Length: 350
Image 1 (cartoon, rainbow, N blue to C red):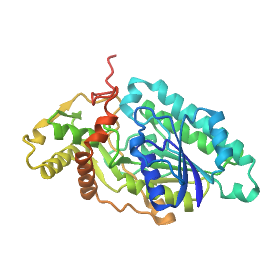
Image 2 (image 1 turned 90 degrees about the vertical axis):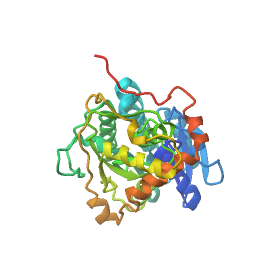
Image 3 (image 1 turned 180 degrees about the vertical axis):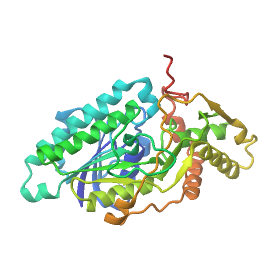
Image 4 (image 1 turned 60 degrees about the horizontal axis):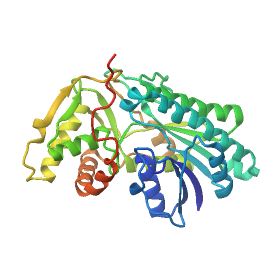
């Protein structure tokens, strides 16, 4: 059984990876998470033989070095990141600190550990960095992001992730650390913090609150069910070629307004006695600054090289997701009992 040091493992995507790993028994997970607002222990399994949880930051080199030396992982998976565009507009400094400086310190600690490994363990070791398609910028009406698309980030969030991607590649080419990078499209599914579009609209629709849609609502994203994303990461970890980048998408382009209307239809179907019309809650609000128009992923490389394709169509994925939020009001209450109360973020006043 491989041991993985997994950072950000109490967040949305990392937490899904942890749950899958513990359930399957495929990996032992050493889970390092700072438990910022979007990290939640309610989203991950209890500690056990195959899951060790440590509260801490990737920006703490002594802690990371200690975990590496103690647990001797076969790979590092870096999920840790500040990840919401609107929050990056309000407070870019945290994104610079975690996504750039934190990744730098994690790379350095991993390199120090890797340099001390015997030759066969060095060859088997991997550093897998989980990133976003937002680093590529905005597409026009046609075309797709590929692994060779030039970077053109347009928000503090995407700029910080682009910088971290470049650092990961530099640590391979300069120091020899065996790295991999994945760039994924918009994830959705159970356990997602409700600042993101799909859980926010789902909860507001259930409760009869406004459904704010930015601008004309025609901004397009590719949507990827989180379980499919984690299966792709497993494929990259096990079969990916050192130094390569793999784009991971759901082959599911949807305009934001269509997403919101689909959520409305799904909520009405799953709660027939709701008492209000969800679609009447839709309201268009001023667009956010630097809002990219369209993202779309070409998944040909990961399909052809690693045999991975998404397995969850959007209709079933969104139904499963909405049903999960209906059934898990206690989780929602616990994660939204702090500072975030589903207010709009990322509104500039300049």
